[in-house]
Image 1 (tube, rainbow, N blue to C red):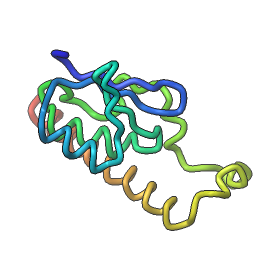
Image 2 (cartoon, one colour):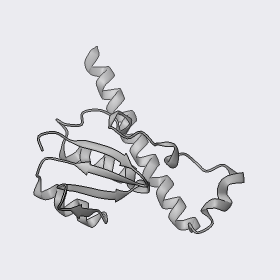
Image 3 (spheres, rainbow, N blue to C red):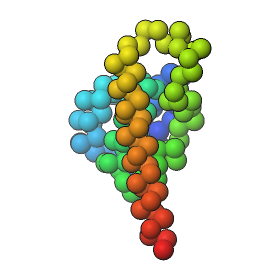
Image 4 (cartoon, rainbow, N blue to C red):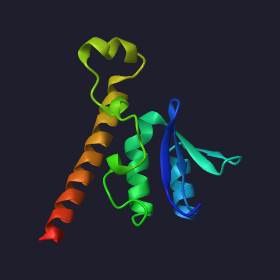
Length: 123
């Protein structure tokens, strides 16, 4: 694998990345699962903000832009849940939902900083 690829498959993310021992350790800490048959990592779809942040940190040349420029097609799962749909997420605790939203906010702030920096370099 020479370049980074992140894609959605069913209800999880598949990350195909060049070898990096730091990525292996951090992906394991995030709860990723190594799939030896395909040499890829699998993460729950809800972990997209954390996975995007990790890949931006460890593979900046492969991933110079914001998270939405990755090959992630299903970002609707990351948007705030409307009140009438919250019953479907009844199994998610308030604390977990708060943590998920804070992670998403951190990712968005990082993207804003990246965009601001990119605009400043354009002059």
